[in-house]
Length: 279
Picture 1 (cartoon, helix red, strand yellow):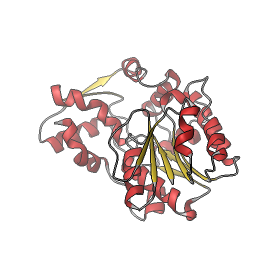
Picture 2 (cartoon, helix red, strand yellow):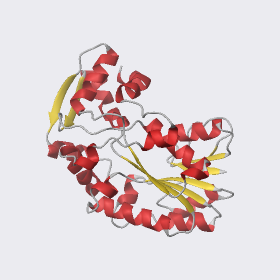
Picture 3 (cartoon, helix red, strand yellow):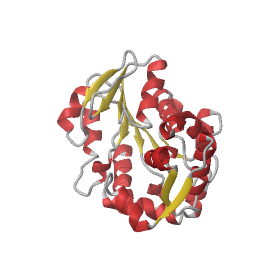
Picture 4 (cartoon, helix red, strand yellow):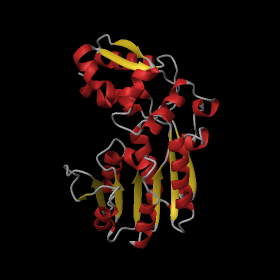
């Protein structure tokens, strides 16, 4: 059995579907019960409360570990999940980390994630680490303003990074969970091209067949919005990257193609699959 945490999210949902379609027994973990693919067991649990996670790990051989925002807080102890998994008989963990662990190692949230990676390497388990850059699905934050006002509001409108389609992250995660050849590796995951927020708004407009106005937010405005959902440290680290990406953060990684044997999906492909949320 394979356990998928964050199973209702942009990575966890397609990963759960892919594993189920591959014939694997899957336990999907999320804070709230939702509909799951046929044959998938769901366990409502919060990774910040380890006792709630224990039932999900019963009989598991592998774990996909995605940390929610609150587990990046200074007083959190996310590495305890690794120990719990090992004690429960899990033999393989695929960790969703962050590109910033390598490119911005001194950022507060990156230090914590690096410690998580180190704990995994030292655990004695089989492991793989996925380090994606920015997610294409971050554009979902614009869905309401596009629907109601045909407007996108974002900071640093003409500064781009190679955002990754979460479906590609899910496929790489599935490959790591199922294939021994992908174990003991760190994969940097990016999209195929650098794209700015303004260009993302243009891609949404093209898919809608309707103009979408771009409104540039200040850093403080963007920070205020982000800290409603994530810790301040994580918001600041993210804003540091998207305001002035360094050469490593602008690099198009070959790792999606190396694992999957195809190029990563472009942003406009993600938009085409998700355009209904913007209508």
